[in-house]
Image (cartoon, rainbow, N blue to C red; front, side, top):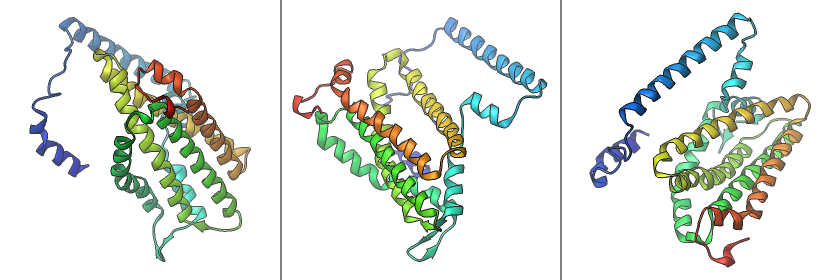
Length: 261
C-alpha cells in the first residue's frame, strides 16, 4: 500500500487535475441538510445502543448481527491452526502466515487478469465475469469440503489452503475490480460516489450473512457445510450465465452474439 501511494503521488501530475474537485458540489442548503441528517443518525444510533444496553440484552453476538460486520479471518485462522499441517516446502510456518496468501496471489495474478480482460474485450460480458467468479468461489468450497473430509483422519497439508486461496483469487479478480468499474459506468453522474459506497456496504452485508452461516456448523459436518456453500455459489453463478443476454441489454453493453452463452 505504501508503494502504491508513492506511485500515485509521483504520477499524480499525469492526471492533470482530474478528480481533484467534485464535478457536482453540494449547495449550502444540501450541505446543511446532510449535516443535520448525519448528526441525527449518529444521535439515534447512540440512543438506541444506550437503550439496548439498559435492557441488559445487548451482547456482542447480537450486535454483530445488527451492524452486519463479521471478521472473516477468524474461522480461516482457526481452520489452519487446528486442522492443517503448516509446512511449506519442508519449512514450518505460523497460522498467521496463511493470511498473506490472498494478497500475495492477488499481486501475482492482477497483471494476468488485466491482460486477459483487455485481450477478451467485449467478447466476455460483465455478467459472465461475475458468473465465473461465483463458480470459482463455489469450487473453492468444494476444495474445502474435500480438505475437511481428509482432516477427519488427521492434519491435512497446508497446500489445500493454498489451492483454496488461488481459486478464490481467480474469482475475486473477476468480480471486485470489474464490479467497481461497471458501477462507475452505470451509475448516474451525480450518484457515482454513493453507488460505490453501496457496493462496499453490500460487501459488508455479504460478510455478515456469510458469518451467520457458520451457525450451520452446529448441525452439519464440516464437509457438508462447505458443500452447501459451494452449491449456493455455483447455482448463483449459473443463474448469472443464464441471464447474460438480458443483463447485457439492460446494461447497454455491446457484444458479439456468438459470445453469449
